[in-house]
Length: 511
Image 1 (spheres, rainbow, N blue to C red):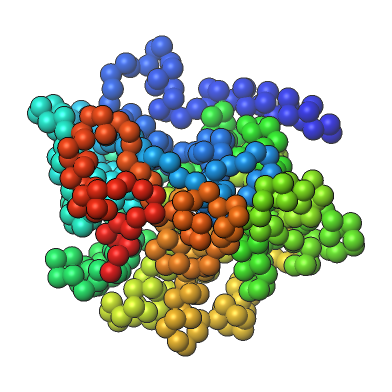
Image 2 (image 1 turned 45 degrees about the vertical axis):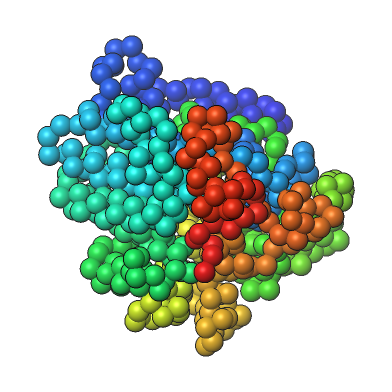
């Protein structure tokens, strides 16, 4: 069928299911629906905002250009060449909505919305601090009390408050009732407890350079989480947004939305070649083979048919590789009109939790079997890919099966090593794989934290001020200079000797 005719058919189907939109959308468009804002409606908006991505580069795939999972030949993207500008304080908008959500709640279920507010505050401000360093936390949202210029808490203070909010969220979810308006976990407070505690593991592992700081008690808190609190138990507990074949709920990189933009996205050398070295069958699920290699007669089942591109090469070299067909592209399961569901997009997953625990054990934060957690993480990551790939998109290619996973973990180069350095590198490499088109920006944060896997840096194309490295942070928003300059300057003096540059190290990255 002509692809344009097919596009119109699918578009017609999408238009025909407008009446199947989410409750949140219906409530906001149906003139017969109640106009009263409920806590459930606010919760829906907050959680959708936290997880949903749209089809544009900035939302969907720029983070994978920065982490060197992929590159594009359509237009020169500054993140592809490591250029950072100023950050955004937009996260505080979600915090205001979360407060309104709690204020509108009544009865026993209010505790659940209070728990969600604590989690949203911890989640949003943790990542905001990872972006820039010191940020307002203790005095945030005090505008109604007349404080329009909140002080900046040090990053250490921010992390202490993040951990406190997560503890509060765990306790309140334990006492709360299932709540309305949750498109991710259906308001299940037990699942939310697992998410909250899994996220606390992630916060703690990000502070590994400070694991001897008595104020933080990182090792003790980590052990308490493992021994005393509920954690994720499988991929069914993932914090993720599931896409479906309904209007406004289609996978954001489907061709019905992006109109061919994905045809320019190529998988990078460090990503593809690492999968090939490990004989990792996920490559066949992530990518389609290079046109040039198929024309030579190589099978779609041959690892050698998957040729990659160094993402640090000059843009004209990358575009030539694309137009010559000398590169592997996205597997069509992500973009095909016949697969509008794509795959869920995660913000926190079971596989990542397993890798975080394995890393902590390897670092000596407590007792446990790091090998078992590592292997469980790999298994969960592979099954996620398999479970969200229709058979037609890997037809004729090596499959992910239980037997394959067992052999991968026992006989190949992915088998857990005996020395600490190699173990950590294996964990970091596997975490890098799970961030492909997932966990926006975590691939960059993790590489910045661990330095592994080693990413290609080309001083001749690098747009960062330091030509031999990736940037370390975004600068503070211009609006803060105009509206809160005294507190901002105090934070800059405390952190960076008064400067606000992309390559200064924040507290969490310094021993």
